[in-house]
Image (cartoon, rainbow, N blue to C red):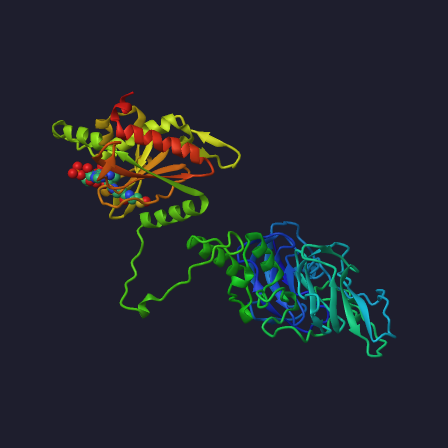
Length: 546
Ligand code: CAO
């Protein structure tokens, strides 16, 4: 074990810079090249990577500190047992700060310019970025027709270590933007044509030419050391130049931008908590966390807008009550299923006049058995039969999106309203059970549910769900599929209706049914057949015995 002290390397001429971010926590393991801190001068932000593999023992600087070359920033305990005769500080000094070194190249060739004309079109090039590697263009900061002044950012490049502005060294009009977002650019690549009002001036500058020589030491800086007059005061780092109006206030370092892109986070929606409201890694992580907790996706993913928080107290007296665990789980499940499942709901009414007469005829025997038979038992029985006859409804999409799983068992879930929230116990093997057994299961499951005594196993393995509001009322509702199941039946209150039998209106007890299904797995035809089958079962219970 050895302690390595990491120091601030050559800053390429900058006197002092600000520590704007500590990238890891004390105790964290780091690998060589992992960023330890992000520094920021008035020109650029720069990562200081770890020179060794190890664990961060201590930070010797804090966010907001001003540091200069040679200042110690962190202690790292290395796993390397090799005892070095050199002091750790000396060992760390020669390490490069970052891989991307932007060193202006005074030798670069200038594009041809017509100094005689009143205007001339000149090409802005990527200056020497200190590496043969190409880096990604992440932002185009101007549009064709824009007037730019010397120092205005044209595009922003980003390697895995640094974000670099390519500022214009010309004052004029952007005539054509050659490079586009996503392009990989290297030293000397063309960025844009700029029409320059020469005004008799013989001076023709490219981005490269305008750059003053920088020290040879590896330093991340912007291509030109000159201050960028058009940059926003809110974002002193040229590295965070705007792309569009919406992103004009983004103030974040390269590692944060990388993280945001990986997580699909739109940084315009993230509030920065760092110095000068700079967006830090934690801000991005917290944004994602809160988006997930609120059940909403981070913008840029599914693009679901957040419902703004409301202060109801301004309208009257309120109280805030903690959600029960079941309520929270239900909310998450409903939101997940609503968002993931393309729902279609089909409606029909079943004539249950005979079924009700039969059910009532069972009352006396039910009292002897101690079992109350309600319409729900018949609906479960009929649904099990419909599932057997229409196996499409007994499928689930496999996680790979390439297959479906066909189930060869029939378990029916039954939504039960309890004071703690909605739960769905499962009647196992409903197709193999008679009305008495199903009724007994309904009673015991509903009792366990209301007493909060259901075991996890009681609520697992459902193939299809029945949600009955028949005892409560209503003409119909559209239930949400209990994914990964693909179908759910909403049952409403039966009503006596005059039904035309071809020669007369007959008083008929009609049961409203609503079948919601996952249209990824079930077609309308499948649903139509399922519903027709179900209605037939309920309308003539003799079919259930077949
Ligand atoms: N039409 C008319 N009457 C009905 C009916 C219907 N569709 N369904 C049940 N009833 C009657 C019953 O026959 C019973 O009347 P009687 O005592 O006169 O026979 C009465 O309503 C009460 O029934 P119940 O509630 O005791 O029993 P059930 O079998 O109908 O329902 C259960 C059991 C567990 C489904 C129910 O208690 C329950 O919790 N329902 C709520 C489900 C729910 O909240 N769903 C919402 C899901 S939202 O996504």
